[in-house]
Length: 121
Image (cartoon, rainbow, N blue to C red; front, side, top):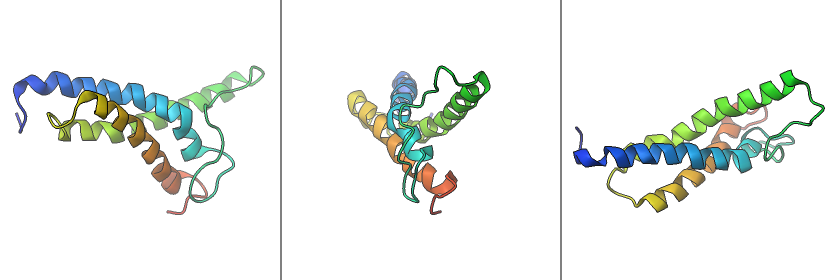
């Protein structure tokens, strides 16, 4: 179905898995801090990289932080997953893994512009 050969569905599914793995790594390391970090300006967040809670933090506070992280990660990874079907048979897998990492980082800037309280859009 479509413009690719039937043997490439495994490649596309593997790219979707890579989107989750590398997207989660990118969003944890820098993406969440860029999108929702505090302090922030209208262009990007400047803190909260590697989101974590203190050992003394309440369970509810930790749950809210990580639930928000996972919710936003799903959108960030989806932004890279959409491309995986478009480039079927057109890109080496290693290069696509690098793309998946950077696509989530770029998404984080746009997420800050749109959804952060001080974003400029």
